[in-house]
Each structure stands twice: as structure tokens, then as C-alpha cells.
Image 1 (tube, rainbow, N blue to C red):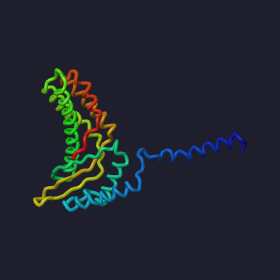
Image 2 (tube, rainbow, N blue to C red):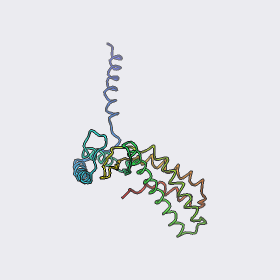
Image 3 (cartoon, helix red, strand yellow):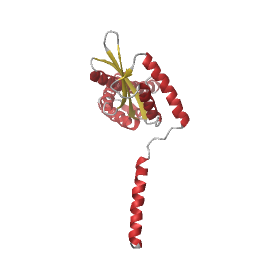
Length: 220
């Protein structure tokens, strides 16, 4: 084999050897041992509280504790971009109850998104002179909430679900989810643009765009 062919072979071998390493590089930063230990400790405590309250995993082959540790690790590996969301609802069947809980979590996010933006807009309006009525701001808020609710439904990532049965036989479902903040922000921006077309915010329109870019506050 001449030198040229030998160089070609080595180049191909190097490329194949390097490819898996590049593909395996994670997007999120790995957690430290101290962070991992803290997550495990807190997750175990939370799991114990949930079990005591009657919650148990729904259609899962893993334990509640393992699911909680995995969920918390996922969130805290990229806290700036992975937003936790939970939803609780009643359902007659596992399928309906699970879906209701997911919708509940998304609706709660949309409500907080609306309250956050509308609250700041009204605060600005009261301190500065803007020729915009409360009615128009409320109209924008309602349209914005509806838009966020619709657009966010396809963006949530479900991690695990819990269920508990009351004494009367009814079932309650608790779903743990997350969303990607970059995608959520795009959804909020699209919802705001459509909502502004249904209302007249005038000079407040630009301020709304600034408020939309801020992450939605977590549910307490």
C-alpha cells in the first residue's frame, strides 16, 4: 500500500473513531457529586411525602423515588431552559385523568403567563400616561392566555404520572412535566402577536414584547 492510500485509511479511521465522541456530547452540563447527592436527598423526602398522601406511580415499572430523582436531575441539569410543570385533575379512567392533568398543568402555565404580563402592563399604565383602556388590556390578556394555552399543549414533555384513589372510588391524577424555555418563549411571542391583533395597546405594545421575553414564574 502506497503512502497516499495509507493516509486515506488513517483519515477514515480517525473520522469514524471521533464521530461517536462528538455525538455523545450532552447539551446540558453534568451535575457535581454534591448536586446529585442533594437532589437524591430532596427527591427521597418528596417521594416519602407523596406516598404518605396516597400517591403511587401510574402504569410504571419504576419506583416513585427513582422517577422523582430522574425528573429532578433532568430539570436541574439545565435549569435555565428546562421548566418544571405539574398538573392535577380528576378522571374517571387512567387515560382521561392523565390527559386532564396535563391540560390542567398547561392551563395553569397560561394563566400565570397572562397574570405576569397583564400585571406589569397595568403597572406601567398607572405610572405613565398611556392612552390605553383597562378593557383593551384585559382583552389582550384573555386572548394571550388562550393563545399560550393552545400553543403550549404540543410542547410539554411528560416524565411520569401518579394516581391516588379516594374513599368514594374517584381517582386523582398528578402529572410531572417540563417544557423547553426557548420553545415556550417562541410560543408566548406568537400568542402575544395574535392577541395584539385583537386589541389596541397603542404605545404599550413594545413594552408587552419585553415582558413576553421574561420566563413565566413557577407555580408555588
